[in-house]
Image 1 (cartoon, rainbow, N blue to C red):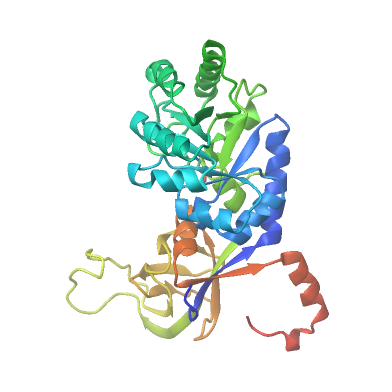
Image 2 (cartoon, rainbow, N blue to C red):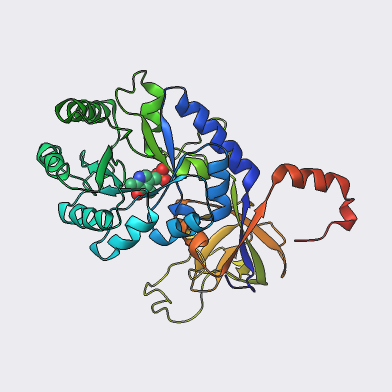
Length: 375
Ligand SMILES: *Cc1c(COP(=O)(O)O)cnc(C)c1O
């Protein structure tokens, strides 16, 4: 983590904890467990700790490095490798993941070999493709696949899962959930294989969950965005009772001038290879923020005040300040979408600052305003 940065993500651990509690209660009311998906926050340990402490028993990440950090930090949760493993990382999977998601026999055979050599049993969840066409075994191939896996030493199938609204945008409808549910039933019966996890999807499953009484055999969801940003992901509507401002992106004004709204001169390509177009609003207050595409996915930022992002390059973002009298040194706060969150949390140029809103409220109440330092 670089020490000198002018941009930061503020992470309100209090609001995060509250989101976790609300979601655990909500999904728990119909007996669904939650895997906390930490890939959107780069496996952040403070965040992982809050998730585990509030009662999430499994944490899932797509990067082995993130799982490794959690293991070393003794995070009290079962660690799950969310993205199907590549052949080149089998040793690490066995070492740092309690469970991995899988779809390829050759990978599972390699997992089996390494697990056996270490005299351990590695748990796997088989991903089934229910139509979204990202990862997954096709349902017609599932029986034969399982039959083969059951022959392998050191491997234990603990569940099946499906993914929706990821690549194909396919919705997790009641019909899709019924199919997955029946598939799980079928496997449990044919192979006498109890499935600890029948993982029905992600934050896109909220509407299905709310509108259907019977979950069938589905007993788990893998949630990232709802926990962190308080939204379901089919329409990006807020889930009642959740905070959507757990994360705040903050950056600083480095230039503020009245300038024309339209560039002057012959127009060629800009830094990103496009010829930009601008509407003429006469003279406007153009403000430059010391942040750019190197730091965060600028297109995923929404200002919390009435200003408008005009464009950005690698290290600058230019905004139309409208009526806001922004001056050099002022800080500007933004909401982040999932892409912006992911990029900011993985960026070495963005500081991560943890706050506890209730403590801060207490602290703020005690200090007279004129003594309050700008942070
Ligand atoms: C990212 C991911 C999730 C979490 O999705 P959200 O929309 O953030 O809830 C769940 N499952 C898999 C396989 C993923 O890759």
